[in-house]
Image (tube, rainbow, N blue to C red; front, side, top):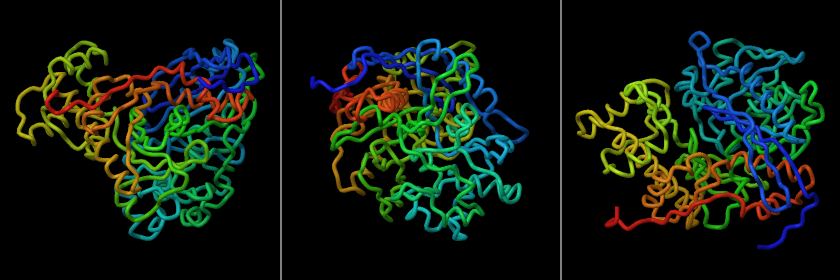
Amino acid sequence: MEQVEHRFEECRAAAIDLGASSGRVIVGVIEDGQSLSLHEVHRFENGLVRHGETLVWDMDKIVAQVEAGLVAAAEAGATTCAIDTWGVDYGLVDSDGSLLGPVVGYRDARTEGLAAALFEDGTLADAYERTGIPALDINTSVQIAAQVRDEGPLPADAQILMVPDLITFLLTGDRGTEASIASTTQLMDASSKQWDRELLGRLGMDDAMVPVIRPLGSDAGEVRLGDHAGMRMVRACEHDTASAVASIGLEPGDAFISCGTWSLVGVARDTPLATPEALAAGLSNESGPDASTLLLANCTGLWIAQQLKIEMEESLGRGLTWQGVAEEVRASYASTFLFDTEDPSLARPGDMLGKLERLAREEGIEGDLGIAALFGSVYESLARQYAQVIERLQRVTGEPVERIRVIGGGSRNAVLCQMVADECGLPVIAGPAEASAVGNLLVQFCAQGAFCSLEDARRAVGSSLECGTYLPRAASDL
């Protein structure tokens, strides 16, 4: 393996990897300039909670849990930290630094149907050409419009901070953002990677109401941890998809599937592609690492399986493990019924088992469905959706996909990875499972001065990241 120049014998950093269902703090250690070891020092459950009729994030709990994790990380020798999270959700902070109301979650019903209305009335009619982001109800732009509709104009001294930026502000006092998370708002110019003033104005906002977009790897202040002083916050790729892609370094012909609660299926490009054909294909242009643009589709991911598992455990009166589910699917699943994983009814919490049983009946499948049939159908339907997106990517870009990189928690699911290889007819490289945390850490190691670039960092630690390979099987072998 090519030797990569590095400047320190040991580096320690903490990745705050916050997902919609769980959060964790992982300390990464490079001891010899070549191998990376990961040590989870704190984990906690996360999820939307009810605030009256509204689905919100419990920010007090989240920040307290992050602080607990950073104390453990500091005790483990981490000198820097960085955060990556899901996109689109935000909090409002006034000039005194007070949080103005709850942080509403993207699954709340307040935006239902609003994106289409904003497109029709002209507010977001040209937003795709400007930002590269399709009109979706979950977009920050649509959420802001919903808040203004329900509560009146935003306060003049309010500033919008995306979830990772809000947490950073509460920990360090620094107000700023980073391009990957800003790109999920549908308010950032896809080419310049700066805020689109025209779109802001249409929503009654100005430059002062959004934070400055800071460079990747920039300093975001000292974390206030009481007796554990000295840890600095670094701005990594704050959107977890971009952070995950930062961990692998895509080659020409590679597509990626960042597989977690959501699945994001895409390719990396040097420039955005905001054409009518890309819009018709449902493709977003999000900012990625190394000044790239991630041309991708946001797909429902393991959310369906996660919700199904909770409800099946209640129905069966016993716990299920993901390994046990996979073993049952592998042992006895035969293609039962396929469904559209983008069915809007599946995006809302509640009665996932009943929704799947209804979809099965629509396909002529009657009677009780067991673990293998239900989860197998979910995985096979997801794999089919991924294959359809990859076909659209090839058609729109005119460039072939020759290999798929599955990264994130879904890369641990051998059944799903094999189904992806079979459905797409392409080899799949699965891993790293902790891709978002790894990408987060590599940005920090560059900021600490250990490596000159993300590419150097990836080459240095690549051999220490666990990955598996799945080859497509002939139809006769299935």
